[in-house]
Length: 194
Image 1: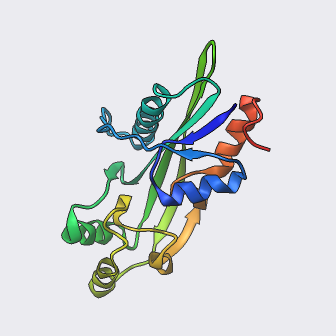
Image 2: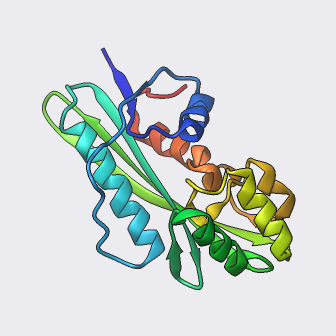
């Protein structure tokens, strides 16, 4: 029996993978991630691969594992999750009035009876944030949705009012480029999606 696993506890990724209209289980990766590069596109591919392989190594045959990781980058610098409210404010001050990139890396691993295959890719979406006042930044941080998000914001939340323009896949910014993932799964040719 074929089984699909999302190696993430993210409710946003769960919702986005649900758009593929296929059954899947959630088995979050638990190990500490190890980053060996400062290049955002390479970093998300590396991190998604670590997550997916951790879960795949514990999975039986006929299992497809999907791992993903998202980072925000400004001028080539990776902006991870903020260290508290002050960190969130500092990040948002950097991002306001500018265009930055959001990278999501995805690794798909097919665990077979005889062999295992994998595909890893990264998508980039450019996001332009309107100028924000210090008061607007403080109000947003007080809202609470920025503290566990890469780049200190959730595009699908209250922060959406500050998004001036986006170039690329919106779902990539939320955390999973489902259009690209769908194409990759179709190319895998094992009827994982309709």
